[in-house]
Every structure is written in C-alpha cells, then in structure tokens.
Picture 1 (tube, one colour):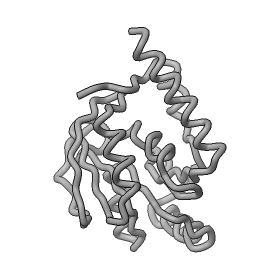
Picture 2 (picture 1 turned 90 degrees about the horizontal axis):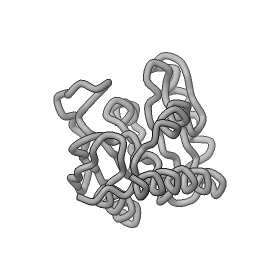
Picture 3 (picture 1 turned 60 degrees about the vertical axis):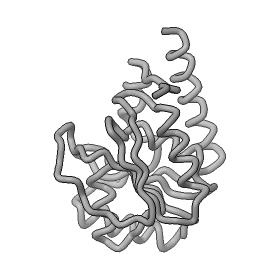
Length: 177
C-alpha cells in the first residue's frame, strides 16, 4: 500500500470547511433541496462519499454512479449498509491519507459505465478530493458535513484546479517527511 498524499495540520484546518456548497437543515430539507438542484442541473454523474450520505441518497431515489464508504459513521463502526452496485472494489486507505490504491480505484470506477461501490478499509473522507479531480466535468460529489448538512461539490475546471492544488500540497508534505 503506497500512500500518495498525506494530510498536513494546515490542510486539516482548511478542509474542515466545505469545499463546495453546504446545504443545511434537517434530513428532509437537505434531501429536498438536493433533489431540486439535481433536477435543475442534471449532473452527468453523482458520486457520494460517506456512509450516511450514501444511504440517504439511495433512500431518496438519487442513485450515485460511484459510492465510497468505510462502514464508519462519526468515528464509530456501523453495520455495513446495503447499497446495490454492479461492482464492488475494496481498498485500504488509512485516516489522513489518500493511497495510490484508492486513487486508482476511483479513477477506474469513473471510467466505467457501471454503478460502482468502493469499500474502504480505513477512512474515506479525503477520497472526495480524488473524486472531484477524476469526475467528469460538472458532475456532483456529495459528502456529509457533520452536524450541519451535506456538501455538493460541482466538478468544474476551477474546482478541479483548487483540488489539484490541495493534493499537490499533500504530496509535497508526504515527500518531505
């Protein structure tokens, strides 16, 4: 398992803030607003990162092409959620990192026309960055913002450049350790 990117304390603080649009409110409110945005913008694909948000999307008939989960919610192990996918990929990705294995799985899954589920042994949080980088232009990457709501990241050229900069900083930090 090769670690390609490592989180720095500065980036940890920076990434506590949403990198996309935060939709606040109750579960019902956030899902209704998300459905309206999806219906209006019609993203080419939807990617969900996180167990709770992935389960809630499917419960509301929004079906991500790529789902990335780790069977952990709020740092506690959970009963694995049942999400149907045509293909499941299992990767290792320790907390605070993005491994080459996980990055490659995301890139491969997004080239596929199948519904794919990536199950992470470790932590999936930072994999939202790789998802934004490899997602087709204008796709949505959706993740949960604890105690606040959900975040929608639209994979625009500008957002991809921002994420590439974050990853470059993480890569540089890893190389200097």
